[in-house]
Image (cartoon, rainbow, N blue to C red; front, top):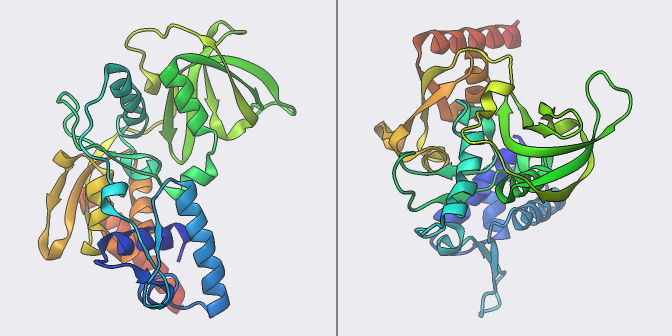
Length: 312
């Protein structure tokens, strides 16, 4: 089991439990911990607690007055944000994140800040933010870039292009961030080139330094500056009851429908059949493709090939 799956299981269990869970209960009941030795469990659990703290998830330790082992919990009132009365600049900051994550047809692949929001043209209420551990650790520069975009301040950083042997200093007015096929891209005006440029975040070296204010152009479409995308197709994916809680937070409410046995069906854009299949396989038996039929058939064919190889 991947570490991110274990973290998701831990968060879900602590949110759903009516009382704090002891370490022994966590080891026995939460998938991902049950097969470890005591020492391996303790090391994994300590790492996971540190990750949750770093992500801002309020995991609390509750001491038992009777002297029994302490328990662990995630208070719902601290985990979920209440209804927010957002100022225009705050709403704009959330829209920057939503444009990067939800506005490009890749909710399934994005896996970073998941914003559960209402209709795009309606006032936003009950916004809930869930931080994804894997991307938070893999792309630590995103927070600085989001802040610069929100504040409309330039940034400077060392950047090594695919054709260069060494990094070159760049000063950029950041207009937006986009996630495409597993990679994050910064789009903005390169002051030295005096033109729009696209930068792969993974090629930024070192830290990002803030600069002076700038004025961004109106109605700038970041997606038109990241090329090489397939035509987006609408897909419907069914999530099992075990992870339905995640789907209801990760996607806008109007794209989620109740399904039999506590499952939920989610309508999502898919950049390609391959991207959709990879996403569903990541969830294992807890996700399945319903639409389009061609993607479902391709998934079944791949699983059959894998089964044949494993028995061959």
